[in-house]
Amino acid sequence: MAADLVHGNKVTVVDDWTLGNIITGCDALVTASPDLILSITVADCLPVYFSDRIKKVVGLAHAGWRGVENKISQAVVKALVQNYNSNQSDIEVFIGPYIGVCHFEVQKDVLGKFSLWPDFAVKRAGKTFIDLAGIVKRQLLDVGIVNIDISSECAYCLKDKYFSFRRDNPGEDNLEVMAAYIGLK
Image (cartoon, rainbow, N blue to C red; front, side, top):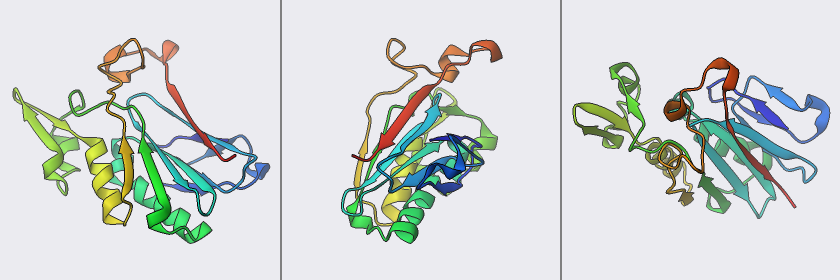
């Protein structure tokens, strides 16, 4: 089951195959079905994994800067609480490798969209960089999620290990992505 990404904050509940293999118009999926594997692709964006072992539900979000701006991680928490009666204290979150603050340079137009989180903007050598994972963590803490683990690996820095759209600058014919998966036993 894969999300057909739109760089937004829509979450789709998927508990059977009736929606098909590709779920259109969303950037996050949640399920309680052990028969399904959820997947997204990323190419610098944050893969955000959600698990509630008590209610036996999982979720997966593609958090690009637009999704972070629109609080997609909070939307996933809301979907888990509303659809599966999850308790925030039982939800665990892991943010996988992504483009770190060391390389996520933004211009004024994008910087302006993050004015609510000025502590996550870093100025260096006349350039501005945004800590997307820091913002996602803050957003999760704001809705009561405390079990948060964040990868220390920057996709841009680790060329031998990860693809980075900004670093590799692919053309349309050779776009690469990384896949993120989650499922239940």
